[in-house]
Image (cartoon, rainbow, N blue to C red; front, side, top):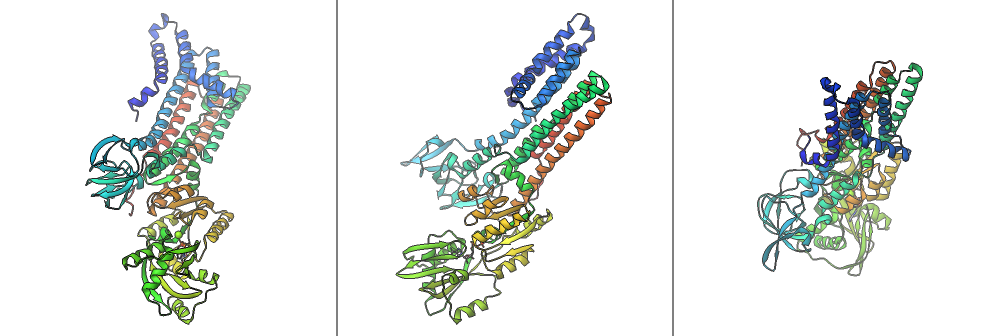
Length: 624
Ligand code: ADP
Ligand code: MG
């Protein structure tokens, strides 16, 4: 656990510890006692060893902040005052020792995050004007062509121009299944090129890469403190007051200064002060490795308290890559014409349905027509002018809103498809519905398992979709969801989240981050699915770098473990301090023994937090 490079960073602390240890050894050699001025040595070693503690105590007093250093300094001073130099020395030794171990564990936690950054290679091979040269990644220009050999990490975000390889994206997604990459595919900095040579056109470097953004978010996360950290700090401060109070009462009632010092030393142990941030740091680091990016301790703590999980449908519960299954024409127009009109309207839309329409249009070899005056109503559809006509593409409520009536054929069509699980959008031209396009989207393979697990955590699982009721019901049955709400506009989704929260629910909203951004921001915790898209990273407190629903389960699990550890430390500290106080009062504790209890309990709680770095090594493989 202790590594040498780390130790040298703490050199002065080590020297102090050694000085104290030496003095301790000397004092044990009773035979020398006659020749050595033992008390003077113990006093000197206590002062040298305790210096940082006295200094911090002084700082605390100046800032009027009650700290453990104050109570311990006073205990040491009192012990010296009653002439127990050896005891003072041992207390100092324990405090120093605990401090050093604590520093090492915490800095090891920070290292996990720092090491992530070091993953990016600094030297890259670039081809400019037909010449291949090695240069520093910072000297790269956008659109430079970078050559990445097998086994090397990809240094930039970009697009593959040439080559074929499998790439391990675990550093971003937490999933170690290699992904096939070839011409035209996007690749991300920090991922590992495994099998072939890739020529990549640079799109982003360093801080601007997805990887860079993720790291800066994690780096910031520690500063974004969880409310529970404030509780921990308060608890630590109260325990110090408690220690003083106990010591005073003990002295007042027993007139035994040694018992009073023991009381002061044993209580006010504050493993919680260091243990709490450490637990959160460890857990944020661990979730990051799984591809779960948390923006701060606060979101992480809220995650642990979630009791309601709200899921969006398209792109969240489903793969979000629907395919056009059917095109219907109502008034004699060719299906191709309907497709072409719809595609022209959708040509700049990012909605999954738009992408499906555009794919179909491309596959059918149709060209796109220019459009003007485009208006987009999220969750409903679009309207614009194409070739002088007003064209609408959207769902029934959009058609209603625009006062567009369908003839009997349309009503029959809707009736016929009442029980279908396919999504339908209508195409209208000059106030008349001329066609319909149907889509099939597939439910994610892991959805069932994820929902079962979430329910196992005691969460209520709710579907919130803009799509129609028939589809929502079908999905609700298949996945055994607790509740479904369909035909919801983005604004209504937002209101539903608000409603749930007003009922006192702690709501996690999971969406794709594109048109669910308002709901994501409103929920107790917004979780964005979306392979590291920028919008998602901005609007949600938690972002999944993969679209794997099991990561939500994982995130909940880790955050709950973290909170459990913190709460255990809280109660453990209170119990140990209170019990120690009682023993001290009854005169069963010497200051020496009190110091031993103080330090070992503190270390136990810190190590309990540090355990979170390692948990879950044997987790089951996640569905991809
Ligand atoms: P979900 O809640 O399932 O993610 P959205 O809120 O994104 O769904 O959209 C709800 C409905 O609004 C869609 O099923 C579709 O009928 C309509 N819609 C939204 N955007 C578009 C678009 N770009 N083109 C056509 N229809 C759209
Ligand atoms: Mg959606």
